[in-house]
Amino acid sequence: MDTGLLFNGYLGKRAHLGVCGSVAAYKAIELARGLQECNVAVSATLTRAAARFVAPLTFTALGVDPVWGDMFQDDADPYAHLAPGRTCHVLAVVPASANVLAKMVHGLADDMLSCQLLAHSGPVLVAPAMNPAMWEAPATRDNVARLRERGVDLVFPDSGKVACGDTGNGRLAPVGAILGHVCRLLSPQDMAGLRVLLTLGPTREKFDPVRFWSNPSTGRMGASLATAAWLRGAEVTVVAGPCSQDLPSGVRRIDVSSAREMDAACRDLWPAMDVACCTAAVADFRPVAFGDAKMKKDAVGPDGFVVHFEQNPDILAGLGAAKRPDQRLIGFAAESHDLDANARGKLERKNLDMIVANPVNVPGAGFAAGTNQVHVYDCRGGRESWPLLAKTEVAWRIWDHLAAI
Ligand code: CTP
Image (cartoon, protein in one colour):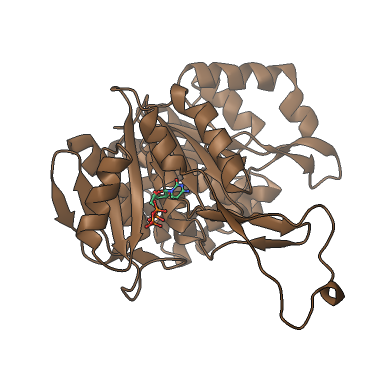
């Protein structure tokens, strides 16, 4: 499982999984493992139908504890139907059948899972999976609408071919997407209401139709910042250069290629944002294009050829120049020397509230690494040096720091 969701914010949190009868029931096992990898303790209840598709023992063997089934087993805790409501921070029904959705709407409590749902007053998430005709049925549509009105978090099913061969909406959403939503329900919502813009990844500057100038940025630091902000309740828009970073399904992503495209997208979006954070490794220069035709190698003589570069827009500086007093702006600075002076210079020149500087020659930090070692400067003259930390942890702390200045 990807470690992109591994934040310390969930330490000590507990999730309860309700598993219904469906071909997709085995995916609840993958979800349980993903939650455990995020340091979330997991318990589960399998309905009688779910236990026909997957064995309760599989969950137990993977450390899911406890695993409940029928209501009146001889050795069962007589208050098991109340336990998740008392001890779990979220109850996630994955996959959720049409039957359990209907029972939730009406408060029916005729088996262990439906009793536990009724007795759980905390956050509830449902990720339905069923035949498309059952999903589109007026009764299901109605039930889903009523559950959403009550604040139940719904992860919509995907469309495609389902197990019986029919095609339509009804496939369980990808486990990674469901995992993100469960983690969001376990996170503090201290960024709720904030509209956050992020740039990430490299840019590509073409010099003929098949060749470009770029850099090895993977967008990992920016993806961690986007994910952390989304988990904490923000409405996040990412303008991404070409990179393969996964982002939570709730994050809006605009893909661009060149610095000028990234600049245009950011200028358009900025007036409607509260915060922007530029992590993209924007190419400062672009080759002056040779035109629309591919450069042929036999057209180049033995002395090679000369490429001329022209300057790209500084996206961060542009946002800084247009910044309103109610907006906050964060920049990054990759420095090989004079880190202090360069970072403070950029903070002031680009009209930033905060700049996160990383020395480019620290082992374990920089492009593609899972960790980063940064120094943080803010517009009030504050300076902090953080130890080498996972990029997810650096991201979480950056949002904490912004809230504190
Ligand atoms: N940045 C940007 N647009 C550019 C160049 C940089 O938005 N054309 C942003 C980066 O996303 C980062 C910050 O500016 O947040 C600093 O980038 P960095 O490469 O460290 O510095 P530069 O401003 O490019 O200056 P220099 O290369 O001289 O260090």
